[in-house]
Image (cartoon, rainbow, N blue to C red; front, side, top):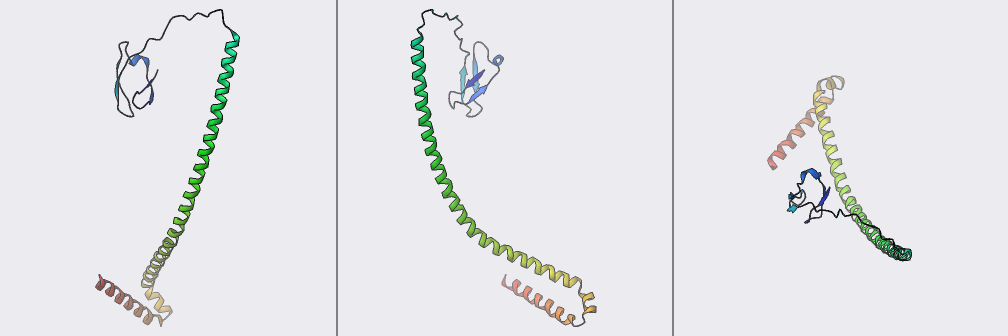
Length: 165
């Protein structure tokens, strides 16, 4: 059976055997509301069909209901189109705002990305030169003075940065 919470109108499917004839307390899993639930006896009397049914009354009622349904459908379509138009306007405004934000963020983040790549590449080059210093000096004898001056300059920069801190 399907039971509806009287507080939040959440529907739950519960096995009939879990609720005794005298009823029991139930607790909603969504809002934690507790209420007493009793299985209400449905009218078990056999309904008898009266022989005097006027078919015209039924047809007019059906036609009136069809007219009402059509009117409701038209109103729903109108409201849906209004809502869709508003949503489209909001989405276009959001897209404009996000594109302007992305453009400004991209410029700043690109600069820092390039800066980080440059620093990492420079450090990798220094490590590579230090590792291969001896073989490079054998191949290029004049390179020893240049490498010595480079490493001295890097030591000076390191000391300068330490002094700033």
